[in-house]
Image (cartoon, rainbow, N blue to C red; front, side, top):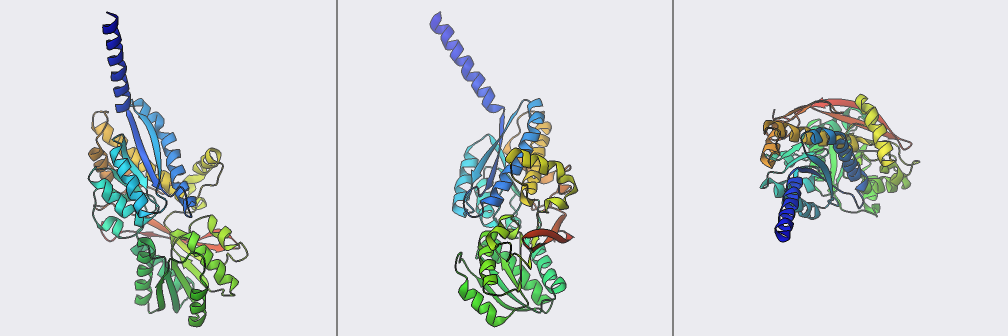
Length: 385
């Protein structure tokens, strides 16, 4: 009798453990949490965590324990793809918020496609991210073809540049953005004296020398703040005061620190993630962020939060359609792509057939004496609706 009773208790415990495992729902974040781009990657993870904290009660009402599993992709495609395979193997993970880098998103989303794990990006802008037409890849930010045009308009219009020197960091993001800027500038009759790719991180003296010789009206650098900041610092130390324009890769509070406040002038960037003070609904979010992480929220923190809310609302929609039962990854993937999401800091979100946000906003931010200030904003739509 004792053995039988023991066996029954063991079976009951196993059954309870199994039931508990089935009621756990996880989402993952995938972003650089270490290395030179960790400032932005941590913002994405933290924004996602705040959304998870906010939605836990709603999931609990349906009998689900909601958890976040953060992964560090180190801004590296191979590392990100390896993390994506781990995510695919964890059946409790129903969707992913990420990534920061388009060069990571492209292979990672492909690695997740067969497992039907949906991704919602708060940052990726390369056209190829959604042009592949993957059913699991979505983004809540504008594309490079919109951002490149906005950058070119600012260079030719506000700055009145007639001759521009373009640099890129040789990544999918930087090359794509620089290419779109070059195309748009040439269409406006602006001379592009170079579109030079560089992976240099510490010594830009040879590039600065070439810029001196060309004497452009402005410089455009398609890259990330940790590289571009060093370039600007050396450019200013060499006495070159030419305006430098970039994309949302410059959208980090670390940029003025790298450049040095005294040199952090005449810097502009287009960004798909609004400055916190440009989002009227973000005051409560910013206060919660500061209280939770003892750090100031930045644009990508807010967009990480919004991307996570799209994911979480999508999972809830899929669960309700499934009779309030645990939805499959395929059901979540479909619910996200077809959903209409409201109550977000950046406005309502819905996706077109390839996962682009139907209406997004581009922001132009200027840096003066190390301080960020919104210059202008423009509503943009993808070519395909």
